[in-house]
Length: 96
Image (cartoon, rainbow, N blue to C red; front, side, top):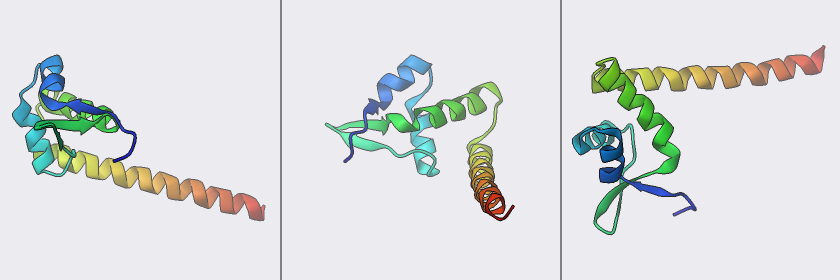
């Protein structure tokens, strides 16, 4: 394991006023990685921004898990395309 900090799922859920089952559902859909530490479920702190976005999408906008999965897939594709465009612009800049 790397030097990442793990956040206990039950404590995170209590702080955000959500059910632990929601985080477990995210894990079942492959949207978040849950690790077991000392018989407690934990998520890497690097995933917190994504998990908090998913919470807002679900609880504030009433988007179901399949919708969240689709949104995050599309966001990943957009990010990949933006990186490709940046690389292509750098290459074009070399030829100008």
